[in-house]
Length: 118
Image (cartoon, rainbow, N blue to C red; front, side):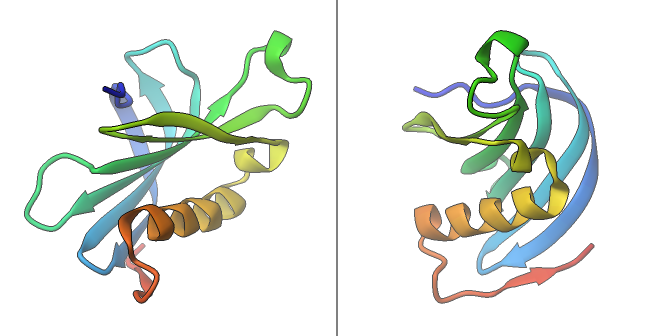
């Protein structure tokens, strides 16, 4: 079983309605786990309290930056996997676009449109 991010405080940067999911992109994150999150996109299905999927940008420690400064990771109840490592995941717009695309593929939202709420 995957370990979901333990977010203590964060500031919402973007919000979307994406089919039956509310998507919130968080920044300025303080976490209760060992990861240094730059951004977290949480996909919450309507009527549910907990996210079904997280797409996160993690600032990598200096010894792990040979391919880039930030890891793009997907986390759900069945898996946790780094999908890419690149400095572009430190930029809000690029991270948000990629997180929505990954969420679409993993949650079957290809026929839906993400509507910005914030």
